[in-house]
Amino acid sequence: FPLNVFIPNKVGNGTMFAVQAHDRDVSVSALSTYTVKEVVGPMQVYYRPGSYEGRTSNDEGWILIYNDPYVRQRGTSGLTRLGPFLHGRTVDVPAGQSASFYVYTTETLSYQHNDAHVEGSVVADDGDLMHK
Image 1 (spheres, one colour):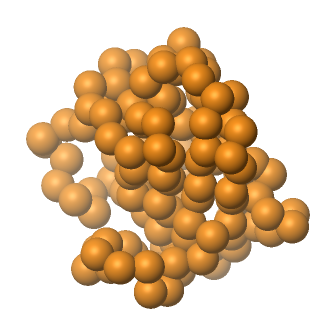
Image 2: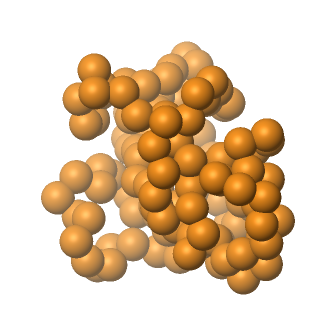
């Protein structure tokens, strides 16, 4: 589901987030993100079942699902699509369960941050999947 970021206000080389399925299984086959500038550069996506909280300081349990050294990053004018995932893989999120993602680039991502959101709180919800 699309998470509209109207005014990206933070930058970084990577961002972590979790999604949680509501009452039915959901499969994720690609992601999209904003970058700071239009450039061709590497991007990677890792995932792990469950929450990323407490699992941000090492790579244990993280699985590489997207790795492209030449992604045409679209800047803030449009979303940069990251997918399909390697080998046609999907991240299957069973009903009531969570999966975490880490999106990384040597360039710079642009994302929306709001101090009102406590880590782990729901940022967006389309009725099938919550973005945390």
